[in-house]
Amino acid sequence: YRVLGRGGFGAVNGCKRKDTGKLYAMKVMNKARVKKNNAVDLCWSERKVLGMVNSRFVLTLKYAFQSKDDLFLILDVCTGGDIAYHLWHDTRFKEERAKFYAAQICLGLEHLHSLNIVYRDLKPQNILLAEDGNCSITDLGLATEATPNLHGRCGTRGYWAPEMLKE
Image (cartoon, rainbow, N blue to C red; front, side):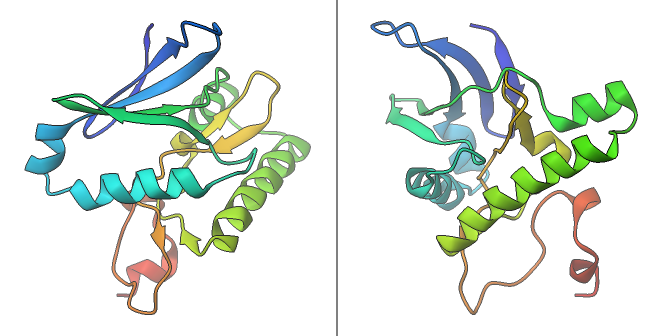
């Protein structure tokens, strides 16, 4: 189906499972582009983290496979758009709506932290809304296991936490 989004290594398309008719999001990453950008470890990390996650507030992996040229991650689909689109459209959220989204994002982050996972790319574009209005954290490409040696800048520059700017 149509392209739902684009990333550094490929695109996310809508797709349908033939035998059930259920809709999914299919993240397609070009192997050559992944290798060229020295991002093999990031892709494996994303696949590993997605396989561990089991929360309604974090997009979950349903299937993963590969072809000769591409890697495929089949994920739950969220048809409500991302928070960035809704902020652009509405200019600002009413307090109750903002609290609702913030609570769900916190629950998603809490789940990741319970798995010892650090999510390093929190921004409005990575929070997707489902048809029912609930939100899910997506794009776990920079997520990684928390270790004592984990340091440095990571994520999208305009969304860095203030303490990251001190380094």
